[in-house]
Image (cartoon, rainbow, N blue to C red; front, side, top):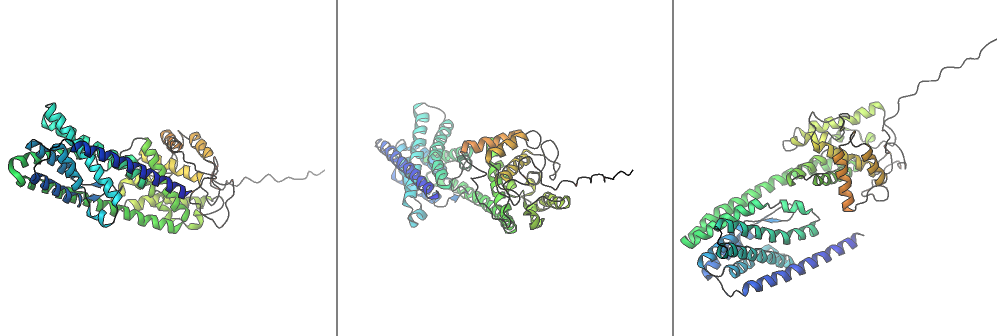
Length: 458
């Protein structure tokens, strides 16, 4: 099964590469047909500058690369335009040479190198053609021409790189696109155009103006990534502790985080808000580190005293998260997963953000569709029906419908017969038992003893 998926993935990659290579070759030939090339000295300056910028790029978590390359390309276009010739062909060759990455060649990742060069050639030509069209032929103000050219560059760049990352890394396109926002592209493009115009007037001295923002951009993104990686490392430490304590809870937590992101995407959350939601969902059961393992894996119902011990995990979650600065804002979402939409339940803080209801729906869905110590997994349609039956009382209706819509659209199957990461328990769970849809998880109160019967006497 996995082998077939890998084969299909490779086939998609090859088809995408073939299409991009063919398109880039056609675009380059179109640019070459102009027959005009900029001054060799000017070309050398910008090609070498772009080469340096690309080889000092920062790699984002999604494997997209964030560089000030757009600024250098727009500076080159403005400089070539100022000389009156060679704008399109000059931009194409500058991008081709500047996009060569030493690390890719050293690692012999030739196809990746060719793909990146193709992407930059097409993006640079799109920007150059747009700039020439709007500033020379249509006569619009230069700032408008730069903005349009930068948007064209960004559009081609994302159109080529996003599908590759989605196929290779399996990350959502929304997340990859969010890594490089259009406002950043436009800001760098405007600055690049200014430098290019100054280059026409001042010569290479103008490049000093570009070195500072390039260095600042790189340091800023590098610092952001270092902080992000530190946060991820902290969460991974907690996750390893949960996995060590209880294998089921560890896997359950990862699935809840995935389902929570599904719901957040359906609700139109931004990339940063989705990231906070994912982290909150990963931490929602951190309080179970304080719950005895024999209670987490008890085959039968819990007594009232045992249930109180398990309930305490929501309060321990609050205690842990409030001690970590970057996790503190997630406390309400993570600890409120046992709060009810109608105001009941337990745990949580006085805040009731939508994220808490999202994690609650995701948590309940995975609890029903996975085999636990006290009950085999339920079929997915039973879980859907239970969520909808409790929507408006236990669960937020929008969260329920968002989860069902996301899973249905993806064609995923969960629950009985479709489980992933099944954990083996010491006692085989019953097919139907505690925690089945509509049932509780505690021992019922003892029934009163029937009145003693007396035998009547004569």
